[in-house]
Length: 390
Image (cartoon, rainbow, N blue to C red; front, top):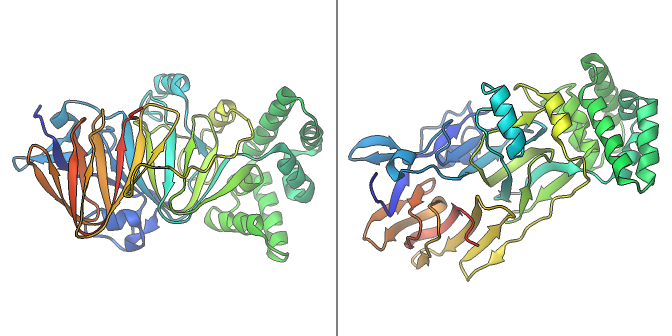
């Protein structure tokens, strides 16, 4: 274990099918690799997670970042470039993650929870959290195919509960409604999705109708096509962020974002995915409370830097912009941090005199407590993920 104040880290690229293709992907542009124009580039991973750990070159030899620093980082830092919808998913809390990992380690590969924060680099579309019950009830009334799939009885009891104020009854009705749809017979689902899309094709299309048709174009006749009728459709503008706690349903739809999360890759999926679906676990783990994620605007620390914090200890995010030809010093934080150069070029220097040249896609490891000065040679945008400082 060497004591290093700063060093460059080689991140890992994940080519999941939903990523944007070739150089259209921000991940491909940041990868500093030769880009295959036919491949999807979905995620850039920065951290020490065993599935795709960061590497450091020491004396000409590649070593694991975790080995070089003698520690695992408590967070996983990512860039996502979303070309088509990700699965309807939720991340388990600590207790459920431990149980899933114990029961099925081949699927759930670590025992950690995975709360996460999403920061929009471009306009970013997502579905997250259940809609207010009255909105879902209105969709049951106006979408005959949705109602048919759910069945008369479940639909009626949900609409009755949605008009009342009994929280427990409502939660039970929503659980039943969501589970009925997600576990419905595949042929029944296909029939109703097809009927719905045929009807929508020839009618006036608002935002939700367009989304339903788009999802069916990406995942034909999939049960997930109904998701916008349950889940809030959220659009983040560049610079907006949101926090997703454990056991909340969500699906990213389109755009580029920065993500900070606890160091885990546990995902429970059901719908809009070619990957393994674990519908019973998803249906049983959700909180079933109507919640629209709060849009976070961050806190301005000074002229250059904005900070985004969440109600957990594993991570916080700072966004720093430095004009070309000027210098800026990022103060040390208590835990080790990772800094991504998203745009621009700079020389990074630590107090001990170590220097690293950074360009688009460079990732810098910074030892806990160490200050770093960036001298920008062109307009620089950097993102830093570190453990919460408060």
